Length: 94
Image 1 (cartoon, rainbow, N blue to C red):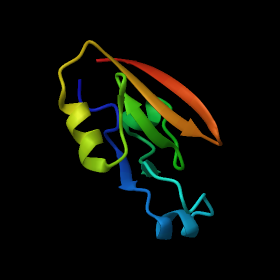
Image 2: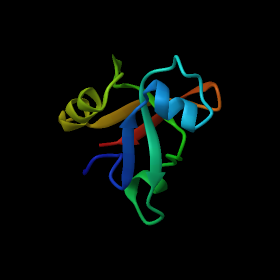
Image 3: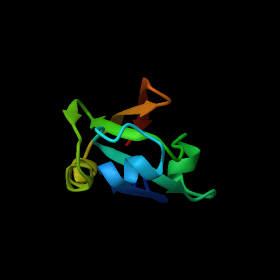
Image 4: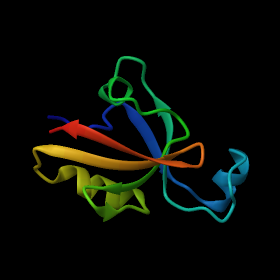
C-alpha cells in the first residue's frame, strides 16, 4: 500500500507556524496542513490540523522521521495523532 498520508501536505510545526495557526507556540511535531479530497489520507480520516505524534510505536517530531517511518514495510499502520487536544490512534491496513 502507498503511504497512509498520500495526498496530505505536512510540515514541521514551528513557533511561527503554530502562531499563524493559533496553536501553542511551544508545540512541536508534524502537522497536516492540507488533505486532497480524493486522497488516501482523506479516506483514512486525516484532517487539516492533525498533529502526527507517532507511527507504530515510534515517536515522530519532524517530517524526515515521519517519512522514514512510513517507508517501513508493515502489515498494519498504527498512527497516533493529536486532534483538538485529544490523542487519537488510527489503525490502517498496510
